[in-house]
Amino acid sequence: MVSFDAFTIEDGSPIYLQIILYVKRCIIGGTIADGDELPSRRVLSALLGVNPNTIQKAYRMLEEEGLIQSHSGAKSYVATDAAAIARIRAQLLENDALNIINSMKQMGLTREDALALIEKYWE
Amino acid sequence: MVSFDAFTIEDGSPIYLQIILYVKRCIIGGTIADGDELPSRRVLSALLGVNPNTIQKAYRMLEEEGLIQSHSGAKSYVATDAAAIARIRAQLLENDALNIINSMKQMGLTREDALALIEKYWE
DNA sequence: AGAACCGTATTATTCGAGTAATACAGTTTA
DNA sequence: TAAACTGTATTACTCGAATAATACGGTTCT
Image 1 (cartoon, each protein chain N blue to C red):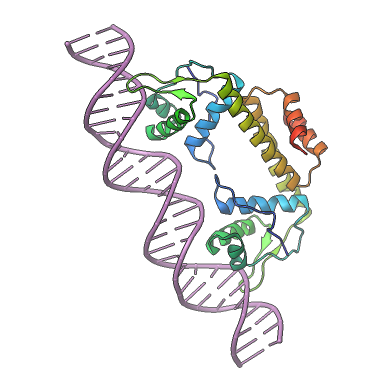
Image 2: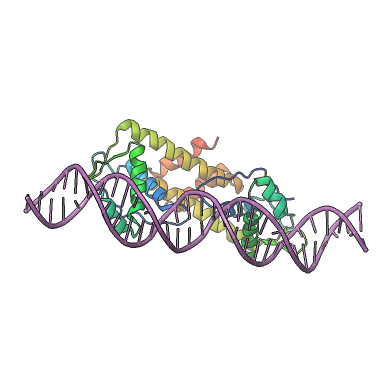
């Protein structure tokens, strides 16, 4: 069963996008594996304190990306293969890296400054 | 005159927040200095293709943080001192670093993986 | 078979971001 | 002095995110 214990809602971006991003990162990190059972829309909405429709929106978009599988009436499961994982891994890592690099360059940091900063806060 | 040439609107977060973040990062990076003249609300709104009220909201919040100064009828100017710069610098850098570290940890990267990734994309 | 789940769909409502169109008073500058 | 700017304020509107309350039909399990 996929766990959302490590998930917390932040503000600044839509909740359904945060859920999608969380699931993708867990798939990349191996916390979520192919075939894992997902919590139902109703259960997860109660757990996170949000509306069932918000969960449905996130699940629906994950299904459209081919990362989970839903059948009317039945439970939903994670459905990924190596190709899908590699694809979203490249997408997310590149996106994160370019974002942080852009921010730090804008603030006048050198490459060495940036590396030192990551090292410092990586407990 | 403060330039917004390097600024582009992304979606995912409110425009006024993006403007505030851009100005702060430029102040930290030295692109924007104390005493610099800011483009007027009307001019910047036309330049970015957004509503004047959106610019006004960003400028107002920057003024409430003590980073710019506005007087009715007159032009607006950047007003920062070393203490203010140091304060927002610490805020932004720590925030950015912790965000990227959290994301990469979630994706199963080691500290070395993360450092290698930054080096790779830092052209 | 029947209860208890499940995914899916619909409609109405709230709320904040952003737009749009003005208006007014103060400053700058020719 | 008068035109052309400036910051500031107000009201009404659109639009998407999220809520809320249901409803329907399929699956699972006892």
